[in-house]
Amino acid sequence: MGGTKGQANTMQNLKITQCKGEGQGSCKRCDDYGVWNRHWMSLLYKIEGYEGCYCSECVKEIKEERKNER
Ligand SMILES: [Zn+2]
Image (cartoon, rainbow, N blue to C red):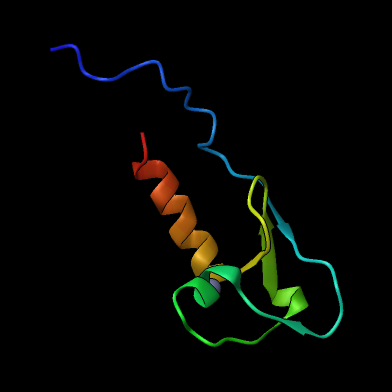
């Protein structure tokens, strides 16, 4: 029963900040899934350590993924 350990669990709390910018932008994750999307920049969020901006739905998803990732 060795299992895997030693992975630092430092990403539990992702730092989420609001995207800055004017006009509209698109969520990077939705883009990756081929979903065409348009959001006002003020409705997009930046996740520390991630590139691009994400909609609130995807921020939630990414948080979940992070939680399940070990
Ligand atoms: Zn999205």
